Length: 146
Image 1: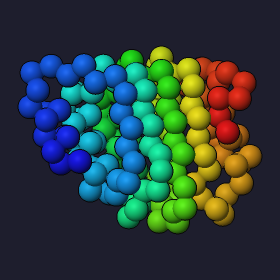
Image 2 (image 1 turned 90 degrees about the vertical axis):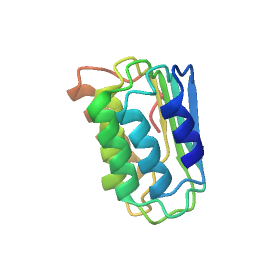
Image 3 (image 1 turned 45 degrees about the vertical axis):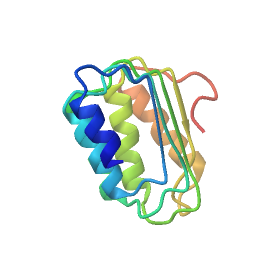
């Protein structure tokens, strides 16, 4: 992750359109957050956080969310978050990241989310996300939030 982030920071121009982060912990998320914060991800159209992410806590998700809040990712149209078998972060970090995507990605048309906190029902999180979209005066397409 450090090598990828370093290359993205040093490149005179990046044309990266998709970012798929898997097996990333707090350090990797914080490193990628610094790349976003420096405005180096302006061409990203799709972000996927998937697979088993070890050592991820609310700290890593919130760092990523803060970078999106600071810079925005104006061209992102799709976000997929499918994180399995982890209990090291909660709906707090997940909610912060989701809200950052809603506020910082005005072109987003698809949010495909998997409930991360086994203590929360996916129905409750779906209602929360739909509320975020409504508060931002945007509507989700049917079935785009799960």
